[in-house]
Length: 606
Image (cartoon, rainbow, N blue to C red):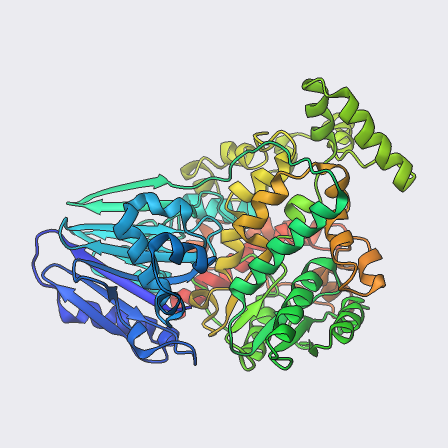
């Protein structure tokens, strides 16, 4: 949640103090109004550390151990006991309030950039090496914490807050047509190095950046490994290993202060809440947690609050159901840093404000579906290709005997058959309201093919899950929960996206453990109500946008004349025709143009 910024000028000429002041003003919301700056001729680092009861005042500044390397960042480390042992630190060093920044700095001094693959946690940081006049920057693999940079007029700027770089000398406000095109086609930009602004770049998750004498080098330092399947002798060994890793992931993310929990009516968030409740009970802090459930009850009969209440009562958690009856699609009361395809962003923002009144940290259940809702077909193919016929018969036959059915293959056969019989063509799917100017500038027809091309099958047993985790999807999602996006002093942490846990899950035999979350259901039986354990994976019973149209009569405002810039992206009259000729209800896809128009209006007003 802390904010940081910096600037490097190779010439060594001093910066105008107004440059630092502009940075500082744009980060004040992150640090409670306090921003500290460290400068030397031609460079400087700034830090706006969020002030929590566990944070020392000394942490609200760039950290150094020897005045040679200086580090600023938004850093939260996992498995610090192991790291401290590797670094030869005492227990008191490990638990010191500002240890995360300094522990990472110690690791860097010992191993240099090679330390990055071994560092666990959520981090985004910049490290200035004074002896070599070199800047190093890095972002963790999942990418919960963003990092942005830009070069202009011989200066290199960076920050974890996109808005802090906008409008600085030499940095254009011109938008990136590829980013805009991807947003209109897919709702996001899969190229993780781009931002909505042409001159400002995003450091992708799992990458590091080196800046030296005007040259920028960016390279990946971590990818998920593809390892041999984990075959254990007893069922209990799988369950114990999963629970132990889940406990570590939750414990590392659980602060000593009161903590909020997102709780739906499902298994993933319920598992996180159950382990958190177990841990605080052992710490004799029974009142340290409160669960929050988002409800759609005002739009349709939403069963999630009912199941969530059941879990909260079973675990003895304080519980609050959040409802926002007046929020409609596209009503977002704040300007987001980039266009946002989340049509109910206003509702999410109000709920973040409410949760932040209780705690500055919330644990969420995101990430549980990637591996544990896996595919059986690739595993079957892999076993056959390797000639493991006995294991194949034992695994799939055993599942049939124990469950009374064959495991769902999820090989995509039905979708391919539908496509073959319907003869679907690209031209019938490409939005007819994309402006020709944008289509040509960003080569959007080709881009559309690329966006709809199946992901490469790299992992033999979990190809879809591996591709999703490697794609950076979660970084894009988690960035929208960062304070730099919401403006709310609330830090979201996702234990189910812990790298230790992900590596374990990717080694699981998909059958039986990843069929309908078999592993999680068996492992959490002692913790959660039976109704939650047995509840099938459930999406929302109704689309909220559909409900707003049918129950509230909501329609997007398409009568206003869009800005000239918007008309260079979207043929507004063609989009209006699409709305008027649409049979039935509007889809989320066709509502991206008004989402983009709203964002353009917001930045124009700012």
